[in-house]
Image (cartoon, rainbow, N blue to C red):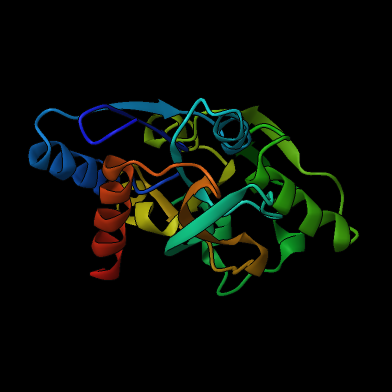
Length: 212
């Protein structure tokens, strides 16, 4: 790709997409001849597409461990909250522990996603029963989370989406899980050519999130 060519960018469904799209829009206004191809997939698919040269850059939670062929430009830190309908009985408690959550039904992404693996690892390490996943959804955007509204199901939501979730009646529960903290970054191939367009995207992203 080049300054006047096509920039292929991947992103995951759990990102702050409003701000990300604002950055892409700004870049398109700056570079009228540029074209952008956006691909939304789960993180492990995007990482493989980047390694295979099918994408030029991806905006994702920093892979752990990071493949040696890749490098990350950190953008912002995100926290995943356990959220439930505002009328859920667990909201009546001032604080919760992990054991209070495991007997509840859940809406979660597939087992091969990092978010799901981290949550299940924490549960397993605590010696607790396997989670009761009632709904499994690869897309965990606001429309999917509406399935939780008015039900006893629990799910996970990003810090940036707390206000949007409140609009559909979902609120974070009073529990913090350190394992669900993550750093979002722009990931590129370490020794690949970085086009002027890709470099400009990196500059704009760093500028946008530094101002937060």
